[in-house]
Length: 126
Image (cartoon, rainbow, N blue to C red; front, side, top):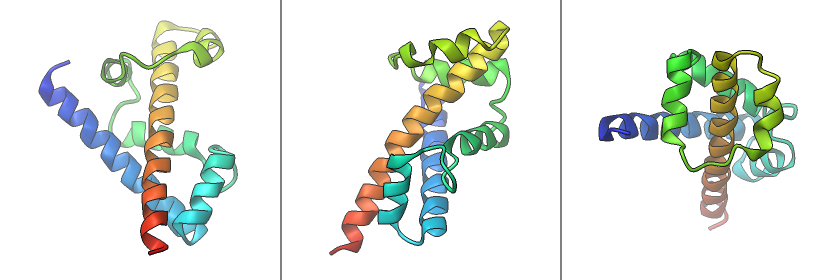
């Protein structure tokens, strides 16, 4: 992956994480309850990680096969093992790439959001 593409992906991930964390903190009124809810059920009521990822893909024009490939090129070492069923039920190659890109991006966004909320939670208790 070219450095400028890597930089674009890092910007995308940072922006998505900031927006998602801000939304959770606002919705649950603080970092700690947001963190508890996110850990318990990432696609649960009020969190909706999957829906947020879909919106980010639309906002950043990644809901195409090229957008999916861009995301997948940015995440070459991530495991696809837990997503086999979703990929195989996608139907076409284009749909499979889109499903896999969203799943892997959601995993990474979840990880980064938990880290950010843990930091925010730690700062608030000081």
